[in-house]
Structures are given as C-alpha cells and as structure tokens.
Image (cartoon, rainbow, N blue to C red; front, side, top):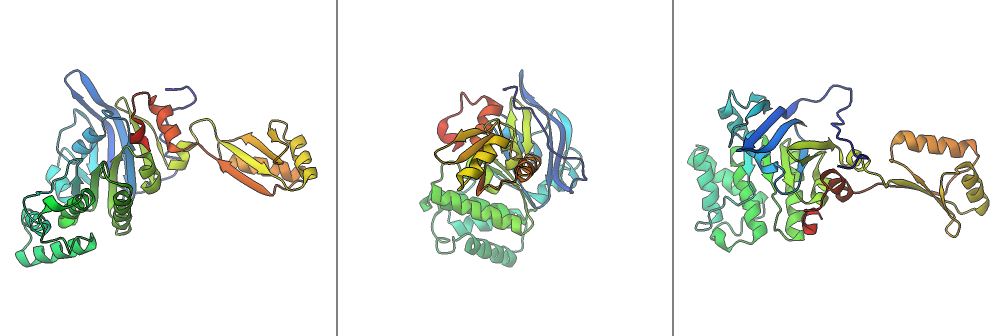
Length: 330
C-alpha cells in the first residue's frame, strides 16, 4: 500500500450512535489461508454501510459470519443488540440476507415464492397473503406475480429476492453484491429500493465491487484488503486519503488574478484561463486558510472549485488494484 495512504478508522472523538452491527477483532481462516485478520466494525442503526474489496478480500465471509452462516475463529460481534455467539437465534430473527446468488425458485410463481417465505416465517395464512401481496406491489411485481419466476428478468428476480428477504420484517439486511450482473436501469431501481428501506429505519449492510454504488448509497464505507480494514469513513473522507486533490480558483479580472498569484506563490498558474490551482485535501480547515489568505490580500475569486479523487482512486491506492478487473470497479 502506498505510504501516502494510511489506514484509518476516522471515528472521531465524540460519542458514537447505537450500533446495529458491531464487531471487534473478527477473525476467520480456512486451512492456512487467513481470510479475516481482526476486523473492527461499527454500523449505526438506520444507515447504509458498504464493504468494498477485490475478489477474495473476505467480503462474503464477513456477511456469512455476521448472519450466523459460519462461525468466526476469533473476535466478538453483536447484531441487533444480540451477541453473535451467545444468541444466534435472536440474531437470525432480526436480520434478512440476500446473497450473491438468487434464492428464487424459478419453477414456481413469484407469488408462490413469497408465500413459501411466509410459511417459513410461520405467518398465519391470511397474514402471509397480505404481506406477500403488499411486497409484490411495493417492488413492482404485482402484474408478474402469477408467472413462473423463471420467466423474470435478472432485475425482476433480484427485486423478488429482496422482497422475499423482507417477509420477516427484518431491521437489518445484508445485501451481498445485490446488483452484480444487472443492467444500469435495474441497478438504479435497486438503489431506489435500498434508499426506501433505509427511510423506513432499516439498516443495510452492502457488499459491492461497484464503487459508484457505494458512493451513491453508503453513509460509511470500509475497504477490505488482505483480511484487514485498510480504511473506513464517509466517501468524502476516503477520497481525501489519496493525493491529487486540488482547489481551482478562477478570476474574471486580470488584476485580481495577478494579485492572487502573487499572494499564492505555490499555486500553478493558467494565465490564459486566469485560473490558479493549489494542492488541497478539500478539508474545511484548508479551505478556510486559503480564503483567509485571499481576504488578507484583498482579493476575491469569482469561482472556487474543489476537486477530490474519486473512489476508484481510493480503491486502487488502498488495494494495489493490479488484479482488479476494470469493469468491476466502475
């Protein structure tokens, strides 16, 4: 990992909100291969948390551990207030899981898939039918409810998969790469579904290789690399970790431009555009210092633009990125 990028939890010094999911020192190995090497997580209730990482980084293993599908070798975790090791049944009752591969049965209809889930959750027949009908309507599947699920498009199957996950009214949902293989329109539809879930107070734990998806949806993002959390924070915090950020000042008055250039000797000049470029991490402190300097010189910029690296830059800087397929990080 480049020396300019340091792992950071970016948690700050203030009190943290109650966690829907928390983990400390989570470890897992398969034979002599260490998949998770002591990761810490704190995911506030009612938020979207995105776990990024290249193939084989341990994203799915993390989901499997937190959803009680496999047992960790070490560390502690609490999900929905319940100890993962001490009360796995309570954890299962509070969560829903949508894996990388659809759980939809293509041989039966969409409605029958929903009613099967209602039976598994021991809902009374009438309530099960009401819940199924409402979720099919909510996910735009009411008209296709009587059709075999094998006739559904990829996006429809994914929506049905999540609708099935919601039959038990979980407060925490694990979505393991939910949009992989979907076309852009279906992916945007899924994003709308995730936002709607969070607006209802649901916590979403999302794993993805689509950096745009994490940037669009997540309140906090963690990058997993070689079994460890390389960095975590908001998208903006992560973008400030890598070099390349800058502030661009543009002036309409040539005299103001010259005065600013004189007061900012480290700036790169563009005399034709009357613009100055200064390296910056985009932080409030740096911007305030820059503006104070301009005020002291009696100069006002007509346009100020902050440019920060995107999550692609962050991902490659933190993981090396040499073996990551280009299409998987767009």
